[in-house]
Length: 192
Image 1: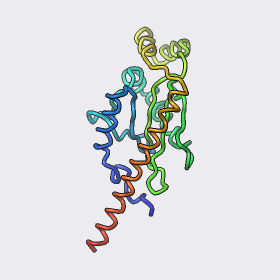
Image 2: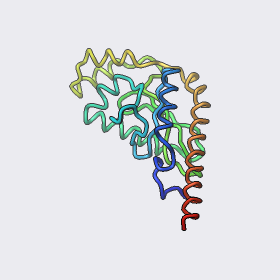
Image 3: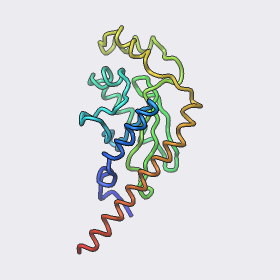
Image 4: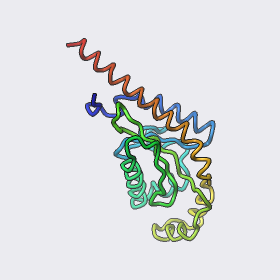
């Protein structure tokens, strides 16, 4: 079976997944986003393309400036494409300086989407890096550094512990996609 005849959104009810991810965020405060391999965000709250729980630094600065937005999309796409088959997850510091983690979602062995978590640091941020970034992109430096200070810092050990849940969730989502593909195939065969 090759699911390329359908988009990931055709195979998986992204609205149901969105509800699950929002509940997870409300319970834990940890952001989860579902994206296809082109960097399209498939789960958001209001149709704007913005996922619940995004850090203010991303929402109010990086995703609003055309150059830093391009860095966001480029980082997400690079992280997605670097995942190798069988790899549980990949961790990456984005081009804007925050840590993101991608967990691949496979449908019948085909990598079609990713669960992302992120927008955090593994250690206290390098303030000079962000001060320079504020200057380069004409961000209000005080406001920008204020939102930098609000980005959570998690240890690598803490993130590693959470990957078990996320890889299991990605597996369940992939199985949903496979079940939907089989359902469509059987339905189509009976209609002929």
